[in-house]
Length: 194
Image 1 (cartoon, helix red, strand yellow):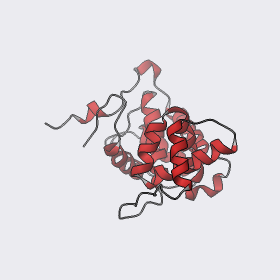
Image 2 (cartoon, rainbow, N blue to C red):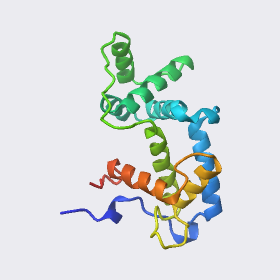
Image 3 (cartoon, rainbow, N blue to C red):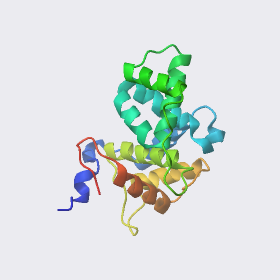
Image 4 (spheres, helix red, strand yellow):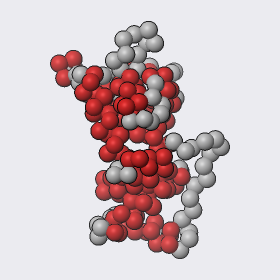
């Protein structure tokens, strides 16, 4: 039996706690800029974003990072950059990360092959998904009907990207990324949209 779409997406906050639209655009811009790092103008590679993901996951969920690194080239890059950051700053990490580093240095940790197609903006798609999710958790709806007033999280994200001179800078472009990424994510409640 097919799952109901609304069961899989994050739940919106009560109306009394909903974020205002302009505040959502401001929050989106801030999250985008923090995800891109100090060299904002050099955002095309997503290097800072991958490092940030690696550093965060090394500290909080090393097993998830290792699983991601074995399955996805972006995860492998996040792990590699995260380990480099941890070593550079004298941070400790889990024994399984240490074991991976030894294998990597011996040339025994292979980078997974990318699937066919373009992957240049995968990191940006992850960032869009996380920002839209954050806005939904603050009370916004993720998307809207095309004829409705432009007040969804995807609208706010599109406005923020537009103000920063980035793409996709339209509701439809951000909505397409959100729906595509949402299909791939297992939410914290364990549900997964297929």
